[in-house]
Amino acid sequence: MSVDTYLASALHLYRLPLFDLLYQAHSVHLRFHEVQDIQRCVLLSIKTGGCPENCGYCSQSAHHKTGLERQPLLSVDDVLEAAAQAKQAGAHRFCMGAAWRQAPEGEQFDRVLSMVRGVKSLGLEACVTLGMLTLSQAEQLKDAGLDAYNHNLDTSREHYPKIVTTRNYDDRLATLRAARQAGLSLCSGGILGLGESVRDRCAMLAELAALDPQPEAVPINLLMPVAGTPLENAPAVEVVDLVRTIAVARILMPRSRVRLSAGRIHLSQEAQLLALFAGANSIFIGNKLLTTRNTDASGDSALFACLQGETNLETASDARK
Ligand code: SAM
Ligand code: DTB
Ligand code: SF4
Image 1 (cartoon, rainbow, N blue to C red):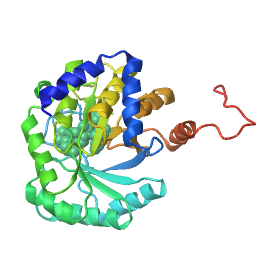
Image 2 (image 1 turned 180 degrees about the vertical axis):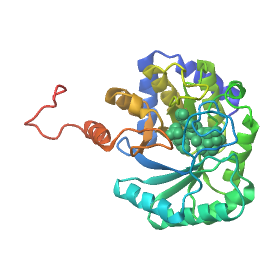
Image 3 (image 1 turned 90 degrees about the vertical axis):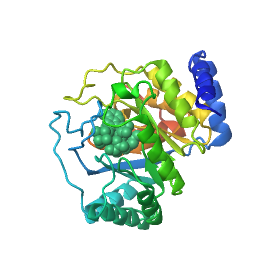
Image 4 (image 1 turned 120 degrees about the vertical axis):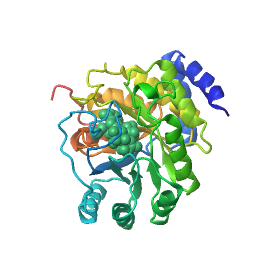
């Protein structure tokens, strides 16, 4: 189906009465997934800050004064130590992010390949996000055992130039094509809260849904506002808009893992449960995303306990405790 056909469906779905949309999305979710199967991913920033791109939301862009401490590419040992901890904490997937415009050639790229091989040898799925990629780099990552490449479209084609001007939408799509051609799974989604309209949200989902095959994972991030970035004062997204976006993603991309990504720290447990009901089936665990905070383990165990249901008949949960 074309982007336009998906866009028409997305716009229709997004504006349905909430419970009609939720009913449809949850039905699709039940048909294609086990509801208790929620993927847990841990993020690590392997190269932090000093990025030449000017993404308006990002703490790591050299164009913004965010006060973030720069960190050159970590050693393989440091990364594998973090990966082992992630495994201990129950992660299924370890995602390594680098603040690069494009993956470099030479020793640094070879180091990333070693990181991938090491993460795989720990029995974890490996994902990296390194910026733009050539086909040859994508093939080397695949040969090293990489499962997925993360590269987000972030918003609609129309809204994109208001957020980033140092690259364009077609650059993003070209990297996704290279990763796919090399046989990698795709992880591609976006951010809510960039001043986009409902049409922009639907158009982004339509672009993702029209990829053939569709991305295996679709992260939906809430903007983490960072002081010093142009979007530091962007208004927060309503929970219902997040839930509608996830529900539409679930219906348009029935087989994909929809990830309730950055921003869980700003959501109540009930809002997170609603997002999971609407079709999200993946989250980031661990206290840190790349440079910003995430929910802690105690919040997550309460969330999972709630999903599983009350097992002790002799007690009742008490919100005032
Ligand atoms: N430099 C590479 C790139 O842009 O593709 C990889 C790292 S970049 C930090 C990965 C993704 O993180 C971005 O595409 C964006 O979706 C997300 N991201 C970055 N800053 C964010 C923020 N403040 N809030 C929410 N998501 C953010
Ligand atoms: C994605 O969609 N979200 C992750 C991952 N892919 C790389 C990144 C979220 C970053 C949030 C802001 C930060 O911590 O700097
Ligand atoms: Fe660089 Fe990625 Fe941040 Fe953009 S989102 S400034 S490319 S690290």
